[in-house]
Image (cartoon, rainbow, N blue to C red; front, side, top):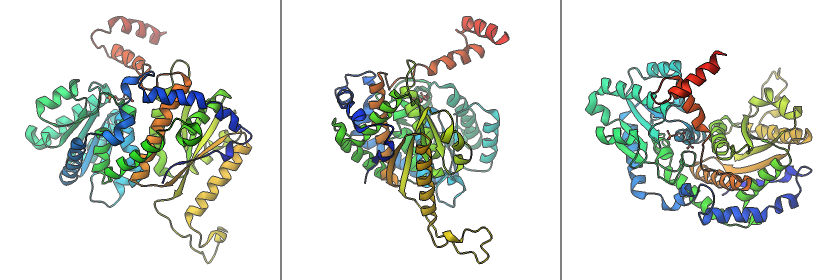
Length: 446
Ligand code: PA5
């Protein structure tokens, strides 16, 4: 089973030959990836990951996940950006956005270190009261301020609750194999450590320990995820645009952007996809948005957002295209019952599956929005399970890399992220940032 790229609703917006004209550029982008000759070629480890991942570490991840399931009521996942979005997306997609509220024999999972909100942290600490805890701190660089601050808090909490020795049994670090403050600390304290490979960037790291440990702790089958990713790796290792639906998606995005469509809206009809869309937004936003280029990635969950952003999409400024995620088979379904009184007038829906109603909402929306001038790409996903998740991750990663090369940017760096960090350090008075601080404070006081 695979993702199917459906271009039916691009008619009138984009002609087949306009995408076909990109076949040479796509082939060149493919060859740059395969030959490691393009921009950012030190960060291409994700391409072969589904086949050459570290099998010994994979077994350690599975063992650690089982240990966490036995020892903890709550697992705290500390990380920001690529160090948490993939895991959170997987858990919400494969389990539920309501995962923590479900009856289950796996720990609740909360995410921390992706903001410095004191209120959120305090609320999370109060949820942890009286519960057994484990902490997985993830930082490739090992130096990112937000997760480091959160880890400080939870390390102290665990040491207070379990003693220094007991805490060691409950702290799991995922970081660089040799460098960074977190690695140093983990080695000194004797924490279990897992590796973010050198050649895999944060936002491409969900199929490493970064994503796999929390996903496994939530009770998902990570072997099936890798199997799905491997199938996608094989399916999309072909430079021929006419045969590669992943590349067709990348080329279509690019062709639409050339026609002034500067915004992509990823639209799905199930809240379980909300965090998957957040993961996609980071992947494409951080990969493409540089050198004054890039398609702005955004997302909506329908029907929810049909009653908020729907108006804008229908007839606001025509700057966007939509990418609809069409999940063919929902995880669960049920029949709508007949109501004797029929006060709401909805008996015409009786004895139909709710999924059929959702499908009609999708069809109605695609037709309305295309009529309103918004081109629609449809990505058909057969069903939601671990295999399809792995497949989808690889599909989007490969599409993003090709898309970045078509745009002429390095899809594997993120220089722009440093600007706020430098200002933050200066404003917080970090030694070495004195000149910048004076300048920033003068600007703030104007
Ligand atoms: O994709 C990326 O590289 C970033 O989003 C990082 O994942 C994010 O900045 C967190 O970095 P680190 O894992 O080094 O703490």
